[in-house]
Image 1 (spheres, rainbow, N blue to C red):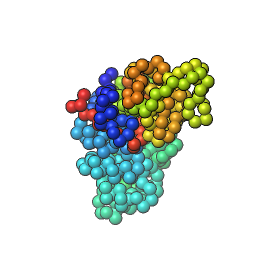
Image 2 (image 1 turned 135 degrees about the horizontal axis):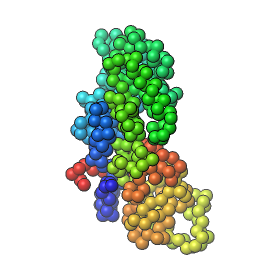
Image 3 (image 1 turned 60 degrees about the horizontal axis):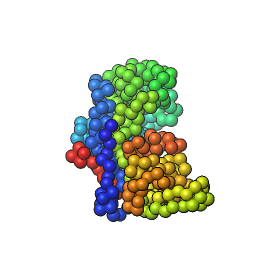
Image 4 (image 1 turned 45 degrees about the vertical axis):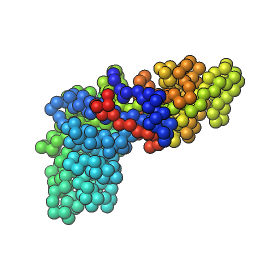
Length: 378
């Protein structure tokens, strides 16, 4: 599966003069992933979740690429993200997933955003905002079918069906959030489907949104009217029970700042967490946890140098990472090491750090030199 083009040593040396690491984001792959996801449910519209700065990939670049491909509905988490998204997407429908915080109504209206309302208090406040504006203000209604995080409980949602506040709050979409969509056989998925169908039946004529990235692959009963993928757009595997159907999106490379040989018994890094059992060749990369690479990958993660797997040794520092490059003859000062890319996809890197690929993506730092690839760059 083709990913972002590897950056050559010359590219790094000539173009990346301000930092020792480079993050490449393949916009064409994001668009291809969106189209692949949309194709799974041809009778539904496909939105894009671009919260957390488009999962660390850069909302200002990602959102216009998706709009150009035909995506018309976007979801963010916070009002601040909605304001950023509106600047990039003047005509899009933009929903704010975390709802309506007290007093935020005027700003939501000013930027033509749609809050995802999850309580009677939010419904009342948004309906009052609409009345003060003298016009309908569209919003979504979040129904909690099992997450117990945000949203109206199913009995509350059913009791509110037909209440004037629903019309007053301009409810234009019903939505819920899957608990275990990445576990295709989990019975909670079927229970959530049943509960959401009950709510939809009580609100005839209002479109529904049920499926996140993994939910899209649970089949037609999960599709409803609007798909809501996020992680899969950015290369994460929405079907961990199968090979990843998505194209890789990000590639992270860092330059080797120094190479040295250590004798048996020598240590490296803070607190001497690693000790050489025999003479080894070490390389230090010019990046660290301040760049968003997880410190939890210390002694567990690895990089690729010239295709060779090179374990991370000792504790990852704020600005530096040490590799064992004994078996990587191409590891010389100035050469590049791949931290994300090729065999090291975001899910693999997440597992090595004891976390998930979502955290790897959303933690991508701001210090990298960033390069955005379009189809013309491939």
